[in-house]
Length: 136
Image (cartoon, rainbow, N blue to C red; front, side, top):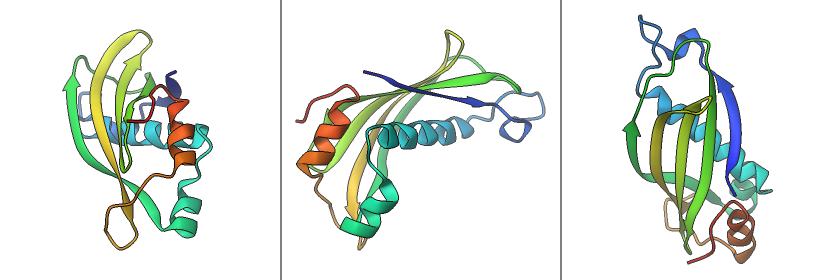
């Protein structure tokens, strides 16, 4: 299953030519990941407050395919590829209609509030698996 959410490209997201600035692709992908995790029933603020766990980006590999422009509606697609004991690998795409804007592979690690490695509970892994991948 792929989670989808939509966002508008605002003027603040673009350069002088009205093209979305390359670093802002990562911001929209972050929003898409946050929405996907929330759709899986995981409240990240509660996870941090209750269990002292947070998700942090460990690695991003991104390809830019075509420009997104001021005023266009971005579709952010997020799919779980692999769910490990302490990390999650996701595939993400930014699209305008059916045109691919950017694609990325993102590895997210689970960390404790003190900066150590956190373990994903079976409940969290199961909830995330509903977004496209099984536990590894």
